[in-house]
Length: 280
Ligand code: ADP
Ligand code: MG
Image 1: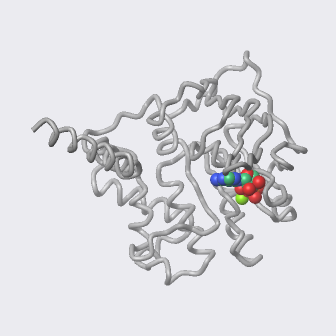
Image 2: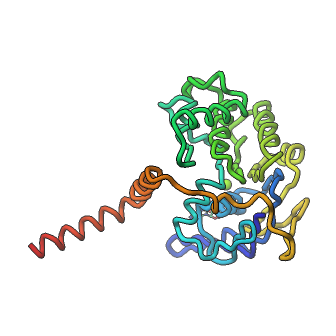
Image 3: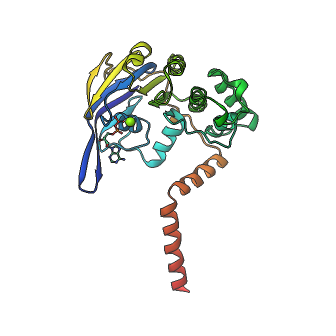
């Protein structure tokens, strides 16, 4: 379903060129719990960000249900990220002044949904992580483990095919880590979960597969998966094809897009006004 082929990624900062990923090839099943292990700086976050479309690869290819992403435009990556991927970070990244329910609801990107439908979907996600009764709390009224479960609910609310978690238990004690891993294991029963972790022991007891990275290369894979060209494309087709955006959602996404590229937008506006003043 998800095939990573000969991916290379370098970061250039001034004179320094850092190879973060070096010819990485790996295939993932539609539903499995993969733990990515490796020392700090080995490329784990880079791999996760590239799989999730947060960062671009230099060369190689990522195939989603057999379809190459080589020709993907920013817009294609945006919808891939919005509809197929859920992210969970070590630092939870919840909005502090919003309720738990609002935090989950706000990340709903599926268009054409009524207010009530959105609320119901967010409630269902919170129920799945066992926190429905806590929905009116603010993040700072919860424990670290609870906040991470909220973050998982938020990542699941769009029902993504793939959940990516970068050291989700990195800030948690061992007892709470176990709860989060139990939850991720449950989540992985019907989707692909890829989790970066430092904890080899926990990875061994919860993940169904472990992959080791060193200096941007895969050095071990406990249960490799190679998709042959002849194999039929999975029944669970990518959601990209099905997505049709409502007018208002596409407008709000465009504004978001303008905002993320605010530097460019401001410069363009500035340059145009100089032009107009010049002509006048
Ligand atoms: P890990 O998550 O395994 O600790 P990373 O994927 O974050 O490793 O980093 C891999 C390598 O790439 C490291 O050497 C790191 O310094 C470098 N790197 C990661 N992100 C950037 C960036 N945005 N700019 C420059 N170098 C980076
Ligand atoms: Mg990292």
